Image (cartoon, helix red, strand yellow):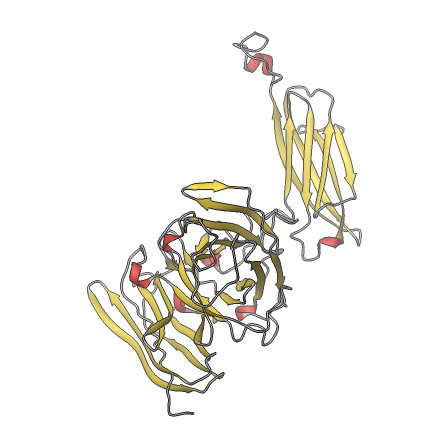
Length: 480
């Protein structure tokens, strides 16, 4: 310990709010991000030591009200002259497999479980003549694929932006995360060329960044708290690139957590400076019911960090709070030498749906989609093996289409080739009589057993009777 002391300010506050709300401008998230001499490997594995000197911010909120979501999610950041580096780690409940409809490069989409990111560069390397109105939005799904890259400029969306990011994703072993869960890990890197910048990154460059992680297990747009929409970067996290300064990691990885009446926060201060930095630490919890506010927990501590060293603080204690009645806010800051290194603010709700954190298996053993075109008499079918624990164990999809009342199959098949884990077929049928039909399908496994059946029902109308007022007339060309 040296005579010079680090000055870090950490504040966590609970105050009442019934349904959350917008984030005050002075409390928008802020993060100083360090330059790293050794870049991380983009392989979907956060190897020991790889990100321990990066900056980190934790705690996604339900975007409509900025209310903290109970699923632990942390973003790590670093940079060098050529690239930005990001890693994200989020908790996956036991038994759940993250959704991924986009199963090839550039195919990730809004329905996938994964990251939704929107970055606005504001640094010294903007090209000559380019204003600060351009920003860049994209998705990154659970297979590590990027999708839907768009440049946003002056209220318009342009789809001619084609970055060449490095990205990867991976899952840790079952039971490696709290409550028997797993960690879903993303790693990503983008160059100055990807963001159409004119020169290298430099200390002091600023960015606005929306850091979102969508869904799991239901539709839920969740992100680090922000005060503007998904195409307006003005209210996103303020990210500043720094060099030779202290940076902060805040993680809230423990379960139960703040949404369950447990105050948790792990804070690491990493001193990248060539000299000791000066920091003071304060932690405070307060809760409010009605108009009365009460302090729940407080911590004050001083730390000394020599050059190049780090120090950790751990907050982990229950607080007396009637879930479903009280609500509050979570307020975290870290400062050094009068500068804000880290800032975070979110609302905390009193309760949340159980299915957010407990897996409810689907009623059907595998996803099946089927459609029948009654005019052209064709059948489209797709069975998905991706969500099985080991997709390769499903070696075929067998299906048959029959009248619902019974009788011989009108179409049947066995599909043994899966592309992107989909078994698909398209069949031309003989014209169908009016009536009800059912398609049944099973997945045949490598050991000879089967999953299913899963069924879909169709109704074929007598179009000439049902639509007599226009059928066969010249009111329209039914073939179009």
